[in-house]
Image (spheres, rainbow over the protein chains, first blue to last red):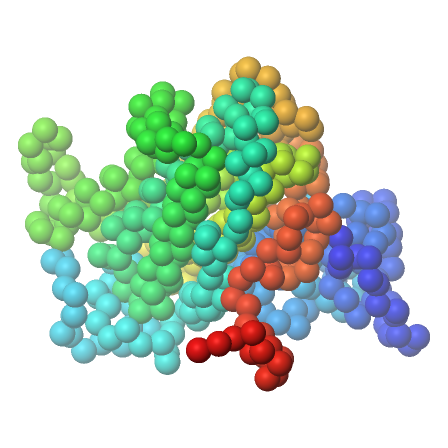
Length: 98
Length: 377
């Protein structure tokens, strides 16, 4: 995958947030969307368009805050986030299918 | 009541519901009730492609080398996709345009349906390239039992809505005796229910029904077979992903009550029926996978794996329209498919023969006089 093979170098003092997924915890920055950072951490996420219109990468957001630099075309259900374009802005907890 | 191609009433279209309000008069996009549909139009236009841009000469040779059961898989999928896009190339226009009330949604429906006609033309392009007599293939679509079974399911909701709207547009509301059909009750809630279920069934068509064929096409291409076909399917999959977002927005807007409060009640009443539409389609697609692989599997894919994929993708799609996932499958059994479905502008699948984004809408701005050296008038 091209998008994961070319990671951007995190800026030294960029805020780092914790993402809790079940018992796993990974650290993410605000430099890139959540999807690529999950993939880099070895967590497979369903995706298709990677630009916010297909809603395949929709993930449950149990707590915490994300923002979208551009409003995605896909409908984002309340309590969910769109991983391909969401920027994590606080420590968050996410979940896939129950 | 009766449809007018140019409604003479003066009204504010931003106050109208998506459907069953005033007929649209001025096609204006400066003010929009739901700007999402204008954004979908722009995105769809940016996707424009033509099947003839994809070279299929290698596919012809590949096809001749496929084993008989693999040819069956390939051709059956093409027939099924031809059926689905035949329906989709006309039905959104026929069913939804007479009842739509927002200019941006009206134009989205037309843009959406138009893109489906490109898909239909691409199937002819593929079939013409791989067999000598396309008629045999096309004729089988209306006679093959496995295909016609599916034709019934994909058209039933459309046909019912179209019939009801036809009666409503000529007679209004009430109970009418239609020769050969008996008494048909036409009321606004009944019309809205038929509309909601039709949109749910279209969402299922575009979000689930195509994906068994997609998986097989990309399964061949993973073995560097039928790569021109895979490139076309990749473009079709990109369009379909956008279309399903369109129907997801319609369903979610209706259920939210923000567009039409009465529709929110209907969405709640229809929840179980909508759920059944998703589950029934998934079961039919699993049966389809069994039919495809009845004479043998292909490397990397079999009926069981495809069945699990159908269950998985159905869960994803159900969640997107606010339904609880139904199936136990929680993981994608064929994660490699996403690398083919991705619509990045970069080459994501290194095994691709060519980069599809190079083929579409390309202009070269860096020309100088030397580029015309071999050009004579």
